Length: 440
Image 1 (tube, rainbow, N blue to C red):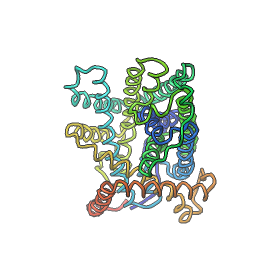
Image 2 (image 1 turned 180 degrees about the vertical axis):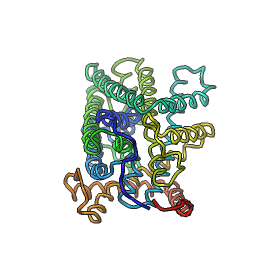
Image 3 (image 1 turned 45 degrees about the vertical axis):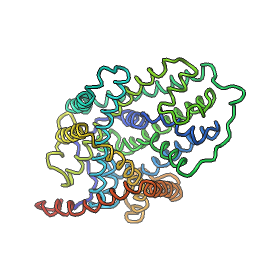
């Protein structure tokens, strides 16, 4: 099977501004509304609290800078699948591609249900219609993709700008409001916590910063190619780091962090204390907007995984066809169909937990791929070289390996299911290869 990196979309018509919007919109989500409570529970000291957000952001930025080398070497859409296949070959790409696609579809289903759950908190009478409403949410965003990628791109750029402004608005509301601190709560001791508690903090930070790779799912369609994607992705991560850091600093300055510990909507709790009791309603509305925006990103990204695999002969042939609007329509329909099925059976929670494990595993493969290709293809064209290589790459790799091992140990059952999935994928892969009339 050929592993050449070619561009399989008819033309590049997405701007670097779209990549910036995908990065910002892909990273900022429900996590920032909740995870401050998880971090505050373990690190109630204001300086430590803010420092953790800075360190988490810098690790995400370093990961983006290192993985950028692979992005620039792989001028085709498909995200993790395309990047991993370039570094390792067909079978690892097949495994990661199917798991990545399944994880994304599960996330589509989950986000559709989350939207309806938030909506029922605002309008309790619609609780009995949650499943039909979730299907409707998924169907609407699938239909948007049928109209063409331009519409989804415009929605994403508008949504990303709105979400960034919302975070700025929340930060300013905290800064210019009264303080909930008193003389006895201006400082907090660093509480002794076990490794399990700190692992939750690390996982929360990774979850809140996750999304820095979204631009790679559109590599074959962005004007300017890999370099434009890398510049926009790095810029997007920096913007998010600044937004999160200022918000964390405002929380630490105005609110007793221990009062946020374990709060499922910590930002709402903080705003209620210093701004208005109506803050929870406002945050719920914002949560719905963020979730819908992320649904749009997911429906733009997910079909491109299947499309890239189909081009390589590892999925249904019809999935590789691109419409005049620039979207793989059959891949959109298949992704939508599976999302609806998962919504109906409600069996996607396991897939979601599994996807978290595999996302970290994919990051290990991506960073290691930079080292592997440097050795195997030293003379290959590299429009962008990882800054600080090999030290930056090694630091990043060790960090992701540590996180992957920790997740495997702490979630041993998930790790076992993941291993079984990889083992089962081998005979499936061999069947697909043998059933093809000829090698590509």
